[in-house]
Image 1: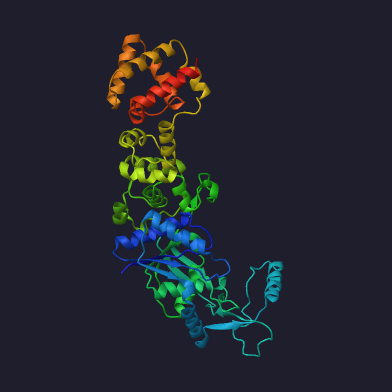
Image 2: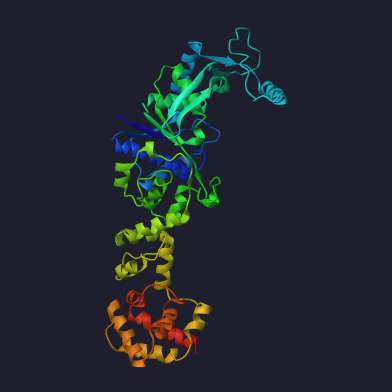
Length: 459
């Protein structure tokens, strides 16, 4: 059975690079009818935060990614202790009494000699009396010669010379285990078959392989995914989009648009750009992940988001817009409003703003628009329009459209002569959806009130 995992540290928010890693793991487990594990790597007790853990779980819930099992490493210290003891008993690990000061001095000397700074294994076979007052760390005995070789599903064969690795620490002086040790133990005990993670972990893998081999565990398959870069090809910063996943919700993105965007950062299936969740689960294969980094492209994300907004049922949009202060549940013309606006919005935030501009009487008029709209016989044209609609029943867009056409015909004018002043009167600016739709949404009485106020203002 395919078992994948996503293993974040709860020291900050979940950003989109992390979400993409989680998505790749989730999709591969789903495609194979396997198991997806969420493992919170909270062994760094000083830096952990409960809010960060909550933020990770909240982000998973928002994007609709479920997990089969949830583990907290902080609840597994007894297990790690047992395996550390096993390595000590088998002489595959040892206590190291070197102080921080001694290690710093050694590194300084090595750097002066132009060598790579590293621990010199001085306590590897130590059998003497331990120095007093030193709380030892525990180091693993790394191989002294040969190569550590593994096949990476993205990068191909990786070869690391044993001499490049020192006897790294597996337990700190306070007894807490280190990242590379617990990650290897958990992946082995949880039967993880595929480790799909960012390529910033590439040089952790040889260390984890040393732990696997020392304990006789079989290796999973590794896939190291290249980073997401900004549009200039540099490391993604908060300004470029490396923000909290929930910030995308606050900015008005739909979760399916974000997932579709992320799956395409580093993976492709022909020229296809739009993938439903079902298609992602059927098609995603980590062996097809690109070797080179992918570039974050805000325009692409907005294009995808507008596609998903356009294809969302109005009931869903009504619910989503409440987060942006627009309440349409009891509005009898919400269908007309949303059908008119959702074609134009790149985000829910924009959609909410456009809805507010229609539903709320304008408090002021855009100066440039006002100048353009108040030319020639605009007052007579608007007064004719008011007379026309005050006479009869006007409810649907088609009714208001006919009224505009009749005024255009009677005054022998182009559509712009009535369209511009009418639009500014209703919304305070030029541009926006069809005028007939706007009027049908706000209703005849509100149209009359806004046009009269505009005529008073421009006297």
